[in-house]
Amino acid sequence: MEMGPVKIPITDELDLHLFQPRDYPELLEDYLTECLKAGFGQVRIVHGKGTGFQRRRVREILTAFPMVASFSDAPPQSGGWGATIVTLLPPPDK
Image (cartoon, rainbow, N blue to C red; front, side):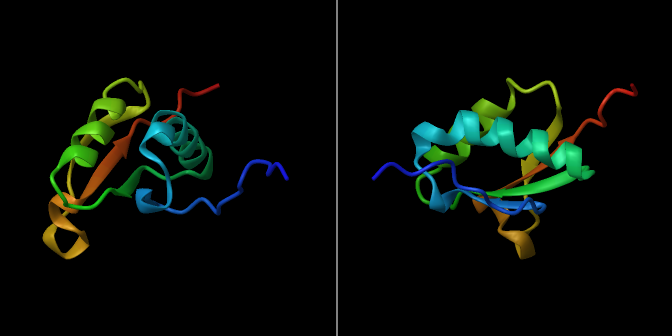
């Protein structure tokens, strides 16, 4: 049985532990696009600490998106280097 797309609620946090790394580029682009539509200016992406591979991969992907103003490690109380805080550029006025 083939499953259709999974709908997840859009919040200011995305936990990547639920997804395969091969899906990160499309997932992050779709997520950040929806976050902009929802009016979020900043979001937290949880990738875990581990060896740092997922962190590097997420940040590599983020550099390709024009809607990303900046990103950095989350504060210690919000995951430290196990999560990335992403600041989004406001959408252009229409």
